Image (cartoon, rainbow over all chains, first blue to last red):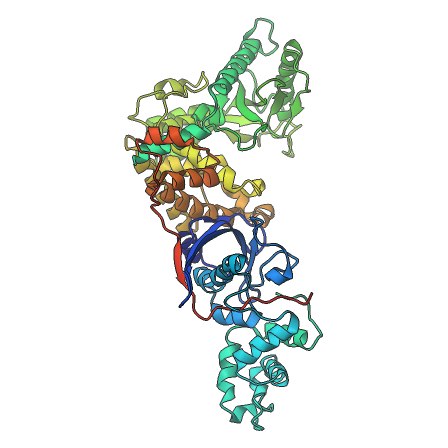
Length: 221
Length: 393
């Protein structure tokens, strides 16, 4: 179990409508009324509440999953809801970057859940995701990963993922994904790679790498 | 807002209706009369029928789901003429069963007498959904009583009380026991009367219903209740709600009652006692302990199921800890809430207690509106938000 009791306590204090429920598997389950007031620079403040269920499995192996259970958000991929019912809060690596090496549920709620719900609330009046959204499918992921890695095209994203899926000890001998023509060990890009390595186990990078090449290993998070 | 009144209002919402107590009392007395009649086959064994469990402790609560049955736990102790060297567990169980069967016919109770592991179940069928679980027992022998008395004393009770508690220890039957059908001496022990005595001793100084309760020959006088009893009721109701979808993982009532009883300091206010008891649960969680000893038999650990493979699969200990975190958060929220709407919402979600707005306002001496919430939702300022994504259509 990746969440400490203190963390659990902090979460139900920060979001007092949420309650920790009994669980049987490895995951912790929270349910209840998720109330927030959110501000975004230069934009209207939103006060709203959603009925949520949050499942917190072992991190970093798996990401928390968030379900809207009050029937307010349709189960439609255009609303960024998977057909299993959990919300697509963002790309896996972006969410992992936000979470960091250790999961803190309050931080996750503030940084990943609230922005999504803020957008959803405003979309209901303004008709679009005002904080932006990714394209569906791999295109959206390529765009986001390009941004995260600081590279310029899909081939470089794939090269970076291949490096991340490789053992750090041998990764340095591979050509650098940034397109500089050097080996990774000789390019400053290796600092970026080292940073990103910290946010997920290598097995996750392997899985993402395979999925982005159209050869999924198991299911998406 | 007066916190004692607030808690009293919540207790009202989970309390058994008076009719349930009355009908329990009628039925238990009726059964007692049956065992007391002249041609009772057990007459020579001086049968004694008494109430045990939450009805006796005054901690029974309304079932969470409408239509759920109440259960009334009774003991049927045969006080003389039966021992582990003269009878098997099975024989004792059948002797009591025969009388219950003739009672069932006499009262024309339709459903068959049902053998459970340690008791017989009589199913009534009328307005109140009710069943009576009758546990057959015999007194333990003198030697056993003496050593039990000593171990209770070592656990911290005073010598007088320890001796009294030990005097009411009994052997009970269990059909899962390998020696159930044999005459042998490894019967399970139990002490429902002793537990009641211990519970009552935790409230000493509060002379309400208690002196009478020690006699145990009556269904509790529910009208006069101590803070301890009310708090146990609230804790049980909260547990039932939070474990509604995982009833097999919930902490058993006797664990809640024991931890609350051990921590209780008599003659303080209801809200003060609540905070003391919540802290005791939290201390228990932090101690990471695997034992909740039976105060009337320190050789017994009420938490012994936690370590079984089933207990681990159901995460009994972990789920107990999660519940402790939640029950602390919920009651602290309820007690700190000064806004009626917030109070009503949380009473509903954490206890399934529906507080009528006007009645609650009147009881708490506040006006129902306008509402100024005492807790504001969390403020978050969004920076570089993740962009939502989706799979292909």
